[in-house]
Length: 174
Figure 1 (spheres, rainbow, N blue to C red):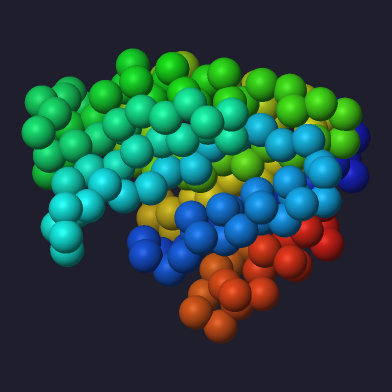
Figure 2 (cartoon, helix red, strand yellow; figure 1 turned 180 degrees about the vertical axis):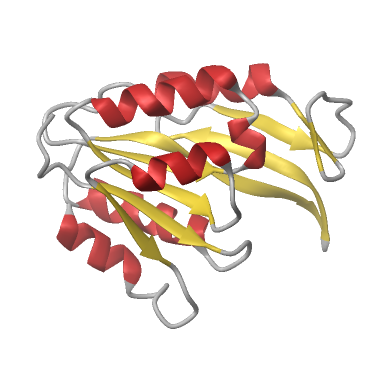
């Protein structure tokens, strides 16, 4: 594995703008004709009420990741998580984007990490010679804490002050 290949964990508290940074970075990469893979997550809302979350691959595949009406298990907060639906979208999205490509993973959070197959795919992804940008919550977690300690991993903190300029800064590192 090439130590020069960027592997960036974009870290921040919930609601700080990690997904916004990931989506803007994907747009910048696509505009620059960089091959991309990966997925983003988003909220499902009815008015001001958040009912759940969706997962959407760069390819366009999309599924409901979690919803208040799903039974689970697992359950995260008031949401039941549909691991099978998540894996149908997320696992293929972690494949090889092509030469010089970047895989964007939004996010390594409680819902996503409930999938053992996803955790294994992330470890495998980080072992390949491909640039990776993944968003991660600041909360302590055995899996993400271990990722932070891996050689070659750089942690980039998102704050109100840095989030607007961060996508362009990440492009510069890639």
